[in-house]
Length: 604
Ligand code: M6R
Image 1 (cartoon, rainbow, N blue to C red):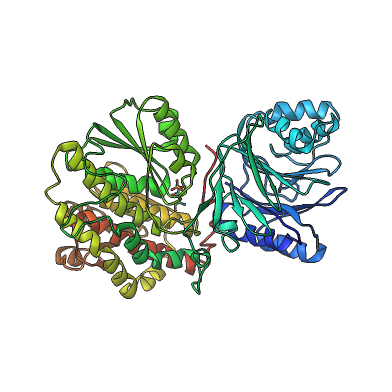
Image 2: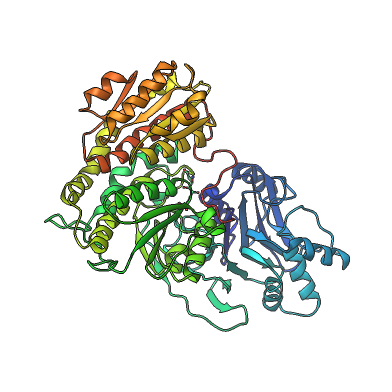
């Protein structure tokens, strides 16, 4: 949560900092600020609200500087106010700091610093850091040593960046929250995430926990906290700057929904052979023959993609479970060296998922990250990584990454089934053929979908329920998540068979039910449809264009191209993404930055 950006060059960097923050706004958007340094002091401009509020203040104040840090916040400690916005400074404005994460021992540190005469102006945990650095500077330490002395006192998780008056450098360190250096010619960059500076450079250096980096206009030095030099490689990212732009769409979410055919092509490309076999370069046949149990750990949309994958494995004889990562990190299930723990995470930075990975590794399990971000913490910490290649996703609502996750997990499932059971699944050829058709099937939906008018009829209801069974169950959950996340309307997803065990009490003529049909066990779901229709609820069915039984039973029908049942959920999900998008648009919601949320949740 929260986005850090920083830049050091030979000319003014204020516009670069502002641009860097705009590119990171998806990480938090309740307040923002920048700090630049001069020989005598640091100058801070910060405001409650979105980046546009900050931009207005910058226009009025016109700060300058060739070294600076910036921050866009998603509040944890302290309400989103001007005072609580980052950067934070010491009493004499010599030090300014931006922070992502949570400093768990801040209350003790604050008490100690206050007793020593430091005055605090915010309610944040972060503010202890500039005061700690100032204390160390006062004791005669250099800025470099003072920064190390301060972070040595911190407990919790952090990515921190600091500027100090009179120092033409940025100091930064991480422990549990991401930081990446952008290597330029005349300017160097630092950020929580590559899109922040992607328009300037695609050469990056990913920092590891406990690294301390000093960035100047000429380059960067990475050391451990005790000063030991470390060599972190410069890597090239293959994302293009325009991948992180809206390109004429009203919202990133709509753009990313429309990018799904291309994203799916990339996810599958080169991973299916001409004779219908799975070809995962990282995992040749036999890679998983020691695996006895598969456990997925994930959050939110990635959790739903994991549920989808669990269905594929369990149905074909591979023992598989799915855990909400926050729960697994609290109460882990027993694992051993024959357990494969698969961390499914778009960002690769979700704190709960990373905590689960740590626990699984400590207990001896093998770990695999399925992620979108090369260089992410999950990719680097897990024993292996499999990339979904969806390209940058900026909208807070995950869309194209769900489709790409399911596509890649389908390939992984086929590899696992063959390795674990000793023979390929009977349906493999059909599933892979359907997977290869998926990009054009999704394109067909995007070209023909007419859910906009349906959205207009469903924008103002008491509640919205989503049901499905088999792979349609995680799609129902995902449909409800997307709907509530961006429309702020009440929406819940249920296993179709579960309705009559309680939720049916909520069903009325003013609670539309979206029923997802995968093509497997549809007749049972149709029984559930009739149960809700009997209570007066209008039913919107999403299913194969060839399913006349479904089309004739439901009140409104949203067709999807006919395909293999295991793949059909991706298509139904695209229609549900569009329903949620259009309802949110009609309601005038902040679609790309829904209230209270942020793209990457780096606190537990
Ligand atoms: O980056 P991750 O996939 O680990 O993120 C997990 C969730 O925070 C994320 O999927 C969230 O639920 C989405 N915003 C939902 O659209």
